[in-house]
Image 1 (cartoon, rainbow, N blue to C red):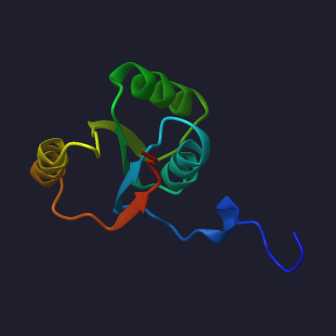
Image 2: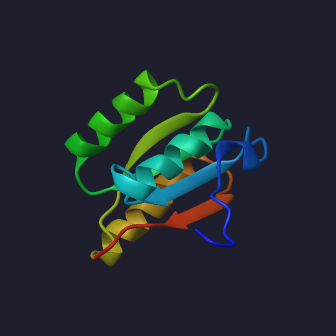
Length: 107
């Protein structure tokens, strides 16, 4: 890529104590994003519709050594506003704030 630098884990600051929500994180770019954030110490919520795919992805992340960070499945279907509200309430029940939102999910 001419004139563009690829982002690596070394470019990220320490994320211990930070809470992150990544939508569509059980594969592709979302998965890699979660991997990088968790390795930097973040508490990451993987917003995904399918529990089976999400838990499989989380186990794979744990097997890949995410260091001090953690990854949690958050049932989230962005096509249903009621479910979005429920997911937001679940995060608020467990966390005092949300520091980073990565809106990666596609239709």
